[in-house]
Image 1 (spheres, helix red, strand yellow):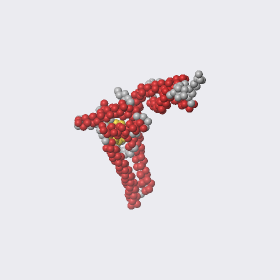
Image 2: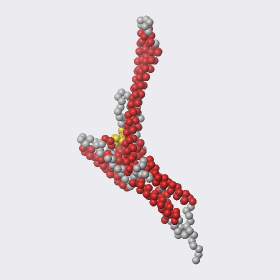
Image 3: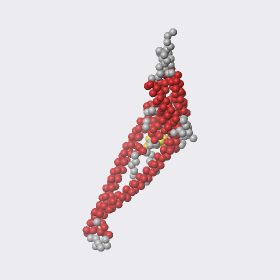
Image 4: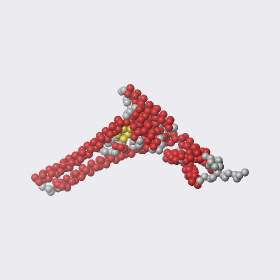
Length: 365
């Protein structure tokens, strides 16, 4: 008999280095997820989810390698020790994926809570900014009036009229008073003209921006067919941006809340400046069009204005989507058509989520 066949070759050093890197990455992700759900944080959850996604190709490569056989020796590619390590790594990788799916709903609930807190903080900051703006405007007007008075007095020597030793005013004094009055009137007229020009320019900009919003709203369309078209574009954009699950859940939360409780005021306004809204929906034009198709209208919301104070805020910071629900008491047929379209859009979204394997977030109490 001839000599026995040689043992299977050990894995190449490059393959061993790749396995070590994958093992280290998996251990780091497992450590972050060790205390879920007690220590579940949104940032940590997303890091683990991204780490798991980064290892998808390596996991597939390891699975394929386990099934390979050396064509010369007819022995497995991996030796017994390496095979056990790889099988253990794959089992732990799959367990981590199961943990991510199990806690996905809890992570989305934490995101919803964070969105509410962020909205409350934004509203408080906006109120404080408006109060500060009104205070600054009042102080500016007071300084302007004082400056006009001091300038007029310094130019024409009005102080001499307060001097007890000044003789009875004659023709020169009357001319001085007339000149002083004319100068003050001219300064006031110039200031008022400047304020009027600034107000007209601000109104022009507001009108142009409102026309642009109306044109965008009309182009987005309405109804279930328009929603389905925009939903397909949104899904493609979200997938290209790195993940479809969280954006679809966010859209589902918005539409299901509006459908289940159309009378609830809390679900009728979506502020564009909200960081969570912008991350999941606002940054995608197709998602904004989905909202328009089910009845949301893009507008500028100015809350608690200060009477008598002209202000020119950044309207992008005040934009919001507000649900334009028809009044059922005024036109029940129109309200029924709106609600049917909303329900149809929700059904189309849930069909897509089921096809993509995305579970809805748990309903709010």
